[in-house]
Amino acid sequence: MKIVVLEGSPHKNGSSNLLAGEFIKGAEGAGHTVTVLDVAHMDIHPCVGCEHCGMNGPCAWKDDVPEIKDALLSADMAVFVTPVYYFGMSAQLKMVIDRFYSYTTELSAKKLKAALITAAWDSDEDVMPALVAHYQKLCRYMHFENMGMVLGTGCGTPGMTGNSPHMEEACQLGKAL
Figure: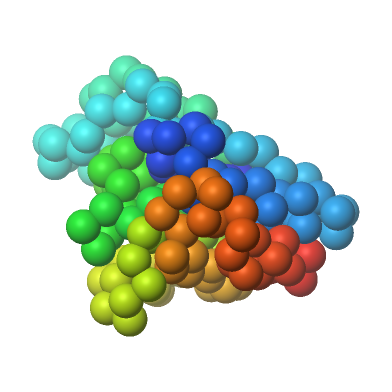
């Protein structure tokens, strides 16, 4: 299976990307091909709802989104990686998802498999529900099949994350595909 990992953390060596690395190790160990796109550091403009694309055409912006689009349209699975910022995903990943608008028809027709990998400082039970609900709604709307989630609570620093059970959880998710 061809997997595209969309890393949405502004911290290249942060907790969510650390968890993603374990997922990748498991997925590659199981024979899958993984492409990582560090979307947080790509040139991406926000969707402004101009309707230039009509949900199925070229976007008016000239940036790195075509690279993301091509990768996703040639993949079997998308993995969304993000830290939790104010109970949701990072703005960097949200911009990528908002830009799905220009190729919603093509992307939803792919019926990709999907997973969510996230890291939050807090371990409170109310830290993840809004992000999980957003991801699940995205999956339903885009006809993605949710293959699992790693909800890394208590992962405020890479040191905390590295010593957490979420590392093995992420690796096992990759292996189980």
